[in-house]
Amino acid sequence: MKMRNFWPLLMAGSVGAMGLSSASAETLQLLVGSYTAGSSQGIYRMQFDSATGQIDAKPLQVVKTENPSWLTLSKDQKRLFVVNENGPGQTDPVGRVSSYAIDPKTHALSLINQVQSLGNEPTHSSLSADAKHLFVSNYSVMEDPGGTLAVLPVDADGQLKPVVQMSGHPASRVNAERQASNHVHSTVSSPDGRYVFSNDLGADKVFIYQYDPKANPHLPLTPAKTASVSMPAGSGPRHLLFSADGKHAWLTMEMSAQVAVFDYNDGVLTQTQLVDLAAGQPTSDKAGAALHASADGKFLYVSNRGTANQLVVFGIDPATGQLKELQKRSVEGDHPREFALDPSGKFVLIANQKSNQIVVVERDAKTGLLGKTVQKLPIDAPSDLKFLVRQ
Image (cartoon, rainbow, N blue to C red; front, top):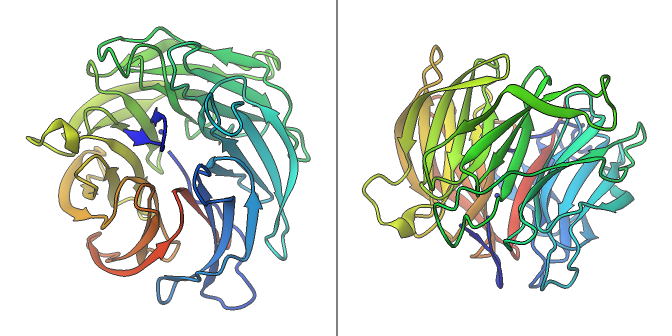
């Protein structure tokens, strides 16, 4: 479970692309989102050396904003969309979404605008394939009003418009404490952009929508013919990731610490495998979170928090998308909420939220295995990591 200092919370992600820093062909820009209940101020823009695996401790820019927990980059790398994971009891009790312009030369961020998400604790966002809508997942810790999927139009200049559509579903109530209401944790599009998949931890389901803004620009989502996929009772779906070829998908379940493997075709997910991250381990070891695949599609990496605090490395069968465990590796910290493979493929950067650090670990691109730790950078409550890399 993802925890803040004062509220129990929960949370697919992609690496962006952009021009390299002029300082060095091996120096990349790294964006770090964070929670701001402590000393963190917001979004940090830093430098990462892909030759050494070192992050420069001195930020290039600090963007002061409340709880920028998830960062979404546009494909053209001109815009950054940020959820401000605010809610009752926080400095700012109103959930918000912010849009920033990225300077093509300096990479500096400048605010375009900010709007309300019309829900509490927005924890994730993603852009539609045509970049005209942002899908925001309002997790909502409290039972009332519960979690929602919010759809926000985005204009050609990157400005966010007010929410035009919202969707929510009944909770499973299998876990009386954590599933008393629905909790939308993430929402992503299919590779062809025709469908949208919303993962609801509270409902134990993945809800599926058709995306057709031409038919109705004010209500761009309609339930798909197969409107949902049920996951094991009490499992808590969190993040969904599609394979590069669009034939398979993987889903983390937070509460059961499992990964489901699917075949995918035209809006339909068909489960083919269910893998445990902490088989035989106590409930305290079970808190599945982030997942990312290597650029060559050969390996899948999944974080498991709780008391386990590990990255689990899987080999991917290229024909079936099914997984074979290769390694469990300590994150050397507490609560790996998110992580990122650097564009060179030589390092993995881990955002350990509760131990207030980013840990950089070596990676063998041929075997997929994780090696020694090369850096532990102190930073308060890091939550998300995105690279700006050359297209």
